Image (cartoon, rainbow, N blue to C red; front, side, top):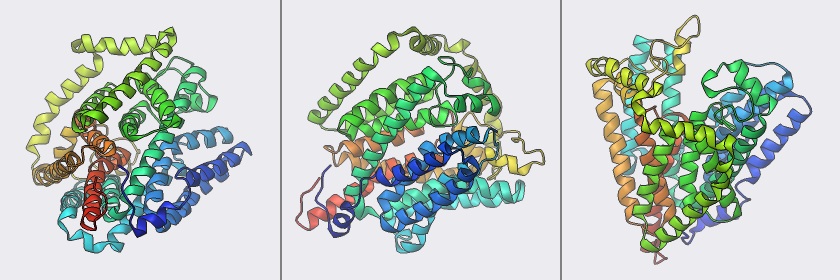
Length: 479
């Protein structure tokens, strides 16, 4: 993975530690919360995040992506701490907009690197943009403009982030270092805090469970809920932990070991079975794609982490919830959520397949709240299947273009990754994208932060292979 650096990347390598900028930002936010200035945090946090995001964007494309990830990691927890400091739950907190506002900056790369848009390597992204634009037009006609635009932004941001990374491919060695460091420290923070949360249930998290009405998570008491750590619910947390564990295959150091151990424990405590399956699928692919010597080391590391996590689950409070969830695999026919999903597939398959034009953006998801005077989710506001959501929203022509673009991206990433078998990061990146696609059976993992993780996974092998070819052409070391 260690490639010689060219001049632009060498200049960026001399910058500060990847965790320093987000660390200073969140430390200042925490100081404001300790001073009980929750209202100030609600205003400062999104504005400060945008300013820091712009600074990172113009100075370092890799630091920008790292800071954006940290905002997604920690913003829900900052929101809960601010609410607790204010002594009141705010159902519409501006703090939640911070990661979205920073992520949308990646669209600026389309303007600064507009020549890349017309190249072959950007063609799959162009197919996705055309599909989403088609769904936007249909959504503005069939639903409402606010709901369609909001849903369009939620889906287009991951494509922008992928294009941003693709266009700044000369920074690949820095991306490799910064992303591994970001996920290592992120897993450390989310994993350790998740264990603390499960044991103690901090009052700000208890307040969130009570006021948000998430009864499916459990009771706001120690050992009585599914862990959600710094996120709003177990589902998004589990997806990020799954991706982080795969990316940490390329990591080294004590932080990686602690992060992997606590991250694995918390992933199990989320009780999200789709993420468990995704981790197995992505992990098996990553192991199959690296050379034999590297594979042996990775398997040994996995066994050590698994062995170290065993003592934690000998404690009844930890083992009971995990065992209850695992028992559902042996009696899947009697599982309530499985039956609901099966019934959904049976009743909705004909609806999704018969609507040729599609319902367009704003017909599903949170965006449907903007299409109702009562601000309630629409008829199909919450989808239990990404596979059904895609044809329902995009129709037949949109689905054809969208699937073509996705398959192109994944096929290209797999081909580039296999060409660099000694690179653990690229194997982990492709494994992450495959894991996320496998989870489409349960939810849409191609939009929001899940979609950003997918784009990172399919883009890293492309820029890594391109960078290696540039070095080889100039007589440098190859991958």
